[in-house]
Length: 131
Image (tube, rainbow, N blue to C red; front, side, top):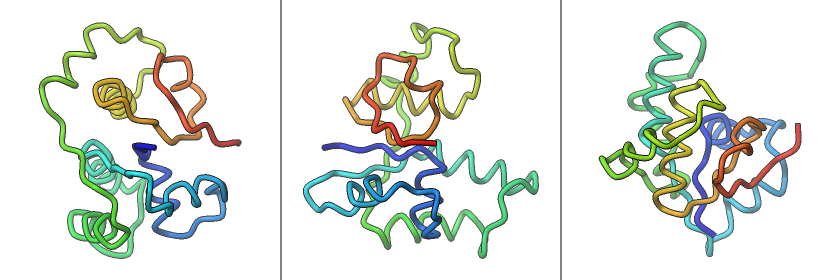
């Protein structure tokens, strides 16, 4: 399975947060699964950290890439092919970061791991987690 982690899932995973469903944690750890973190998530964390909404133990521009590499999660940059999906994406979800993650999941046929039920309204495969 090719998994794209929503930002909150990545943060819960690297901090061993109890909100992360055990099935989701197992899926991330399974070596046969390809796990990705979008540069969109890093961008979102940088914005939230700067606004004081995301406390982190170290500067996010260093801490988050280090944690991604430490956990063998592949980076996923943003490119033009993904952005084009925005033109056809219905306005069911207003969060621009989540909308880009949806576009990336669509472009690369990735399973988006999230607890965000609004994302499930889109024609994207999700690894839906309770909450």
